[in-house]
Length: 115
Image 1 (tube, rainbow, N blue to C red):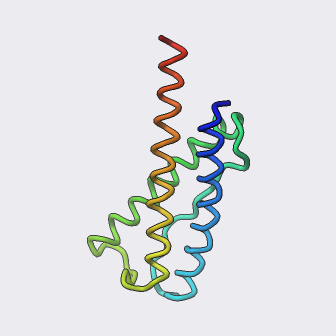
Image 2: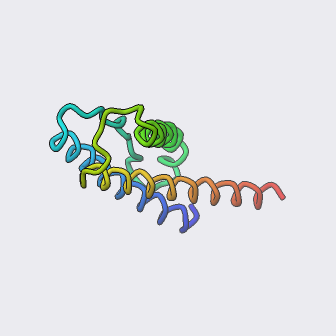
């Protein structure tokens, strides 16, 4: 497996753990707030996890990004000025960056194999 993918997937998994804590922090700080979706994370930074678990994580990340979009336009009941929301938002944005990088490396690797 490409070393870049291992590093990116490891970073994604670590940040997904931070996301879970940020989500919990938001739930405690704002008990009535609408929470973002749970985000399953790949079990390991391995080729099999990437192949079998990445599509599920990627789909869940899209739902978390949609939560941010809805929160920004007032479609979600949450105090966006609270520090817990800020932490959550940073985690989602970081996960999005890792996800984009993972998909980019997968695309480049596939193109290299086929061309």
